Length: 423
Image 1 (cartoon, helix red, strand yellow):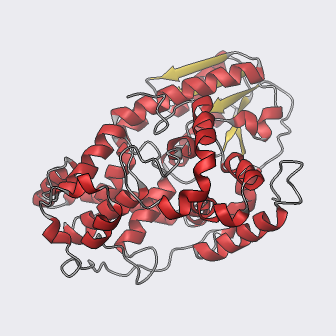
Image 2 (cartoon, helix red, strand yellow; image 1 turned 90 degrees about the vertical axis):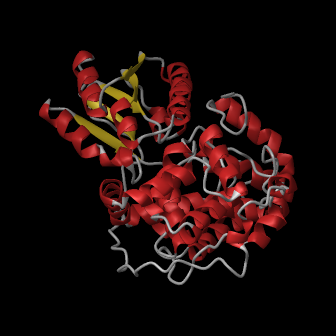
């Protein structure tokens, strides 16, 4: 895979260059974003870099607000904020993630073998609808899929193939370079009709013919299965309302006790130097490629390779910024390596960006217990942007959006000279 390609840039410099290239085309985004074309010229293709925070939402918003009238960029700003909304929504309702993981495990262990066989056929691009099979192959071969194609394919999986939504969500999570626990899980729930009561997403032939590249629709095999008059929603059992937990603010301005502290950089946030942690002077920096965790999840080779390259880029930047020893570990668990390096470096503990709900956050109790056994600790930090935005994801997206939009629109002129967002 060509890591210099904007679809999967695994370096911060590459992602920033791709953003600068796309920035002049932003005013056309609202009109063109739904068109699924070869190499996807109408979208930024920066979702993997945003997902891993090689670049941040704030960095994208500042030049947008500085160079274009808000009305011309509003749609792109809104789409950027969907990711933050989903992150905050799941952070406030972590039980949804736990329930998804339990149901996924149940399906993998106990589903009808015929269902699992059909799922494998569809994932392999042998489902029988030519355009959907093409999307499945694009996903597994490139690690990317246009958002509109994701919705079509998820709707096809659930409402046409009638396959368990959790298996489809797991397929996306294992292969998408930008796979995020919140966006992926909640997006699949929305397509299935679980996230918003009464709302499902159906893959209608007319919609594909309108927005999909004509060459990809030339093979009409199987399209009759998604004719507008044929496809119908699968009705899933209603769920009880998701339990909401209180928001817990995190340490944002690091003031560590005296001693020796290391900085742990992980794949959830690859630019800690641009957070409050950037003011610290750690005694060492560590990155870990948790092979056992990635194998347990079943991440694709492309996702593992992307993480490997992006972690290498993070180490290079960290060495320049922090000016301390930087090392990398693999072939062992996170808890094992954090405890081992702390002993070797005689550290009092670690500081790191707090992972949001997902597989990495699931590993935190083991990490904290392992360090505590040695009399060490780990201090968590969260970005100011997340501290301010995520708690607002208390209900639907549009109240969340209106709060953020009002702040951005009103603060554009006031902050144009300082280059700071009004948040």
